[in-house]
Length: 277
Image (cartoon, rainbow, N blue to C red; front, top):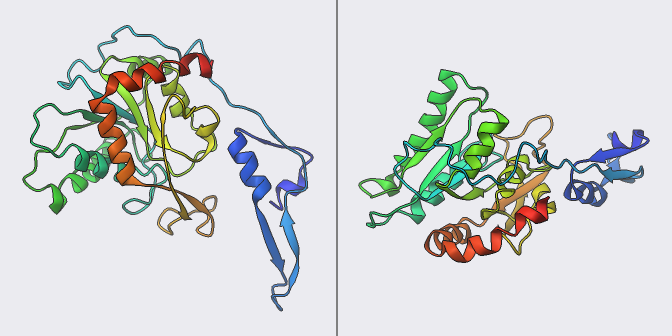
């Protein structure tokens, strides 16, 4: 905030970011006496420079690209985003909680199950990085609660993809919905790129993507604000600040209902293509 007060103008990429900056106020104390010297708050202009999408690159295109032809399931949930640092349940995109919730939700005797596709990486697209991500996934699948159970499949897409390939992936007929348990976004580009297809989005009811993910067309899950865990904190993500923790039990019911009553959800969500445009 002190840095922003040294600027003539502050530009952020979402209304959410603007409101967080405006709502942030701190007591300034003397380092020696700890006496309150005043309140630090934003005093300089702040405007939203909306990030948006290039509609020549990301658009609704129902043609089958064949990218997922090797996957046997015809109903897949897709997550796109980096698997960032943090112990279980504390990485910024909360991928670990997403995987566990998905396995818990579809851990049933039924043969007809959806799949979860993760387009993710830790740091880069190296072989070592890929093996590390697979190790993370297997560690969750090997938890005691899933021993001997009929759990659904999880697929990893690891490697650089062009914008055109990403748009083909998002539009693939096997991808039926998008899911993200993200704890915080300045904008949320992968969600915008996904939502333009008109398929249902299941995500957190908090952060930058709320600017364009309309609740009438999608499923926004509640939760609570909690401090950033020390394992995920760095010079930008301060452990004294807070981000969103989704209610995984509610999210579980949502993804199950989307799978069981897809027609109801796609009829609503297809309206968001025009809304986002």
